[in-house]
Length: 264
Image 1: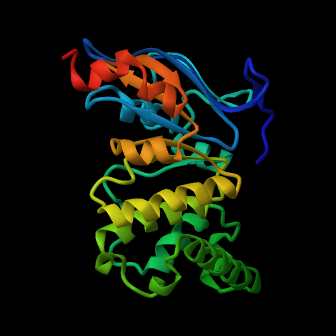
Image 2: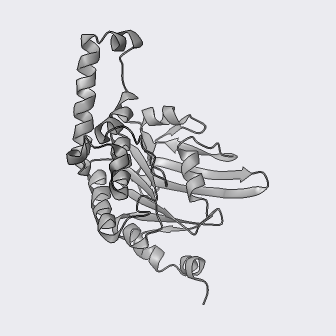
Image 3: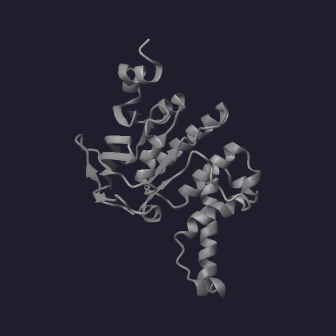
């Protein structure tokens, strides 16, 4: 789905806009007046210490939480308070900190589940295996295999997800999200638990996803990965936006250094 896209001050298209987002849980302010834009076709990193509000922000953007105030825009469309399934249909998907797979299904079937959200076959055609349903199922299987080939998991297609190594499980979750062919994918700590080789492979995959035309927003604690793949970085601290800029600008920002390492 190609939505009209707002223009940032510098003239670049902004596919996702976070405007003055505040989230209060009881008496705790998890996010306070957070605003930034994600440019179309970019990789944007969201970083900050534990408890900075990064995952809360992702949960708001993807419809799992409702913000106390503020708005989220996809292009020029206000998508605040939309349900996760509605947002997925509009082109916003995410992965989670904890890998969430259907462990007793094969790798291929896990990706096919994602594609079935776009299935047009009704109950009757599925029950009686009508030609239209058989044709659609074949198409879904082919599309799922395409994304497994894209992410390097095609050779594991018939393996039960429960038998995958942890790193491959993370890639499978990304594969399933990509199968929806999103406009924007939000990845919540995709490198968590990966070794150095797996992290390097993940970095190459993230760049390949961007090259395919999908915009990426990335929450991550692995600073080497963030600095390697991101075009721009937003820093959160104690629920507020502390800084925003290119990787080099963030690396040289004294406030960011202090928030992570302390004034000393």
